Amino acid sequence: MNSHVINVKTRGPILFGGVTAGEGLKKALSMSRSEIISEVRASGLKGRGGAGFPTGVKWNLAAAALGKRKFVVCNADEGEPGTFKDRVLLSEYADLVFEGMTIAGLAIGARQGIVYLRGEYRYLLAPLEANLARRREEGLLGSAILGRQGFDFDVEIRLGSGAYVCGEETALIESLEGHRGEPRNRPPFPVDTGYLGQPTIVNNVETLALAASVLAKGAEWFKAIGTDKSTGSKLFSVSGDCQSPGVYEFPMGITIAQLLKVVGGEEAKAVQVGGASGHCVPAKQFERTLAFEDIPTGGSIIVFGPGRDMLKVARNFMEFFVEESCGQCTPCRYGNVALLEGVEMLEKGRCSMTHLNELKALGETMQISSKCGLGQSSSNAFLSIVTHFENEILGRPVPA
Ligand SMILES: Cc1cc2nc3c(=O)[nH]c(=O)nc-3n(C[C@H](O)[C@H](O)[C@H](O)COP(=O)(O)O)c2cc1C
Ligand code: SF4
Image (cartoon, rainbow, N blue to C red; front, top):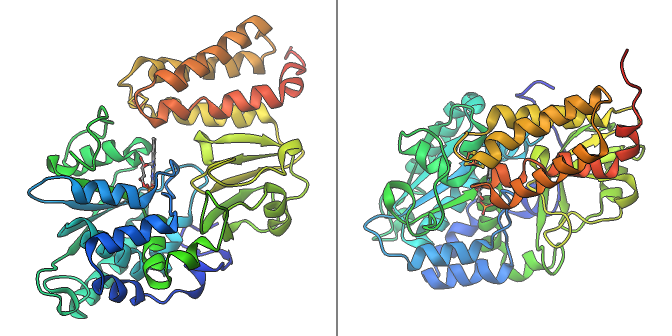
């Protein structure tokens, strides 16, 4: 697929459906800061960047934090393999994203927003800049927004340079400050000590667009979609062995089987949920739901048909992590290389059961001892593939 093609397949109820840009900001301007935050909290909205942190709680922490300046950062790094839904929002619904940033600025008391745009999305820079210029002319950005004295907010766009780890919020902030993009120790968290040491919220593109929708239509409307613990809808980037790859909006809580039916992937033997750092779910678990309480995901769905070699899949992901580990901490720097070597041994039929068990233990150690989310999740795919596809993997003929 050409990277500029917008391939939206299902326009669901929220982002691609019933919300008109502008409604949310007008509503927010009639509310106090704490009312805005309460509305977002009441909606149950959780971050769509993968970790699922409650958005209203994050905004509240930043609003309460002390700082000379505060910042709203839109995480548009979208580096997870198999994810391409933020690109669609930025291409077709940028007003909703900028509106979400502006509402967040109003809620936490920030005057500046920054979009951290994935380097490969450079082609979006000019249209996004044009959109910002129009918003300034219309009084939606700049000083005294829509006539509200004392509410000044503007947005600038900065380009990333293609490092996956820079999507991690503290590495992103380091990169924004002009440093090497390496994750920081946490705490302190960005809501207290973020960009330039000031209180900062980092939110995913989709989260910000949804926050604008929540303000426009109200928390109750949002909560009526999805499940009790995972409210609203979710964008999914679907790729792999299915008839209709593309971007879909579904209510939270849809089962994998339901999703596969819509995308024409019923024959799948496995689905990778959450990209390279996510879990490989075998067919026998396709009744599980895509929701924070079951299988959480930033939205990447990669379908593997019956003919796929799962060891090749594991190799592909481990090569990615060996390349993308920033190397700061040992479990991740060493562990990803050891798991890749393990895949190579399995390919040659030379990995004993004892060694495979050692590799599994290593993967689990990486999950608990790595410094950031990259190393904490990079063994997920390996572990789920060797667990669910043990027969396929161990039963390989030894190459001559
Ligand atoms: C290695 C790594 C890469 C990440 N990449 C992204 C990304 O591209 N976009 C994103 O929104 N969040 C990404 N995250 C999650 C962010 O650290 C952070 O949790 C998120 O931006 C918070 O926004 P949310 O609360 O709206 O989800 C990444 C995390 C890790 C560990
Ligand atoms: S877990 Fe990996 S990416 Fe994260 S700090 Fe450690 S080495 Fe760097």
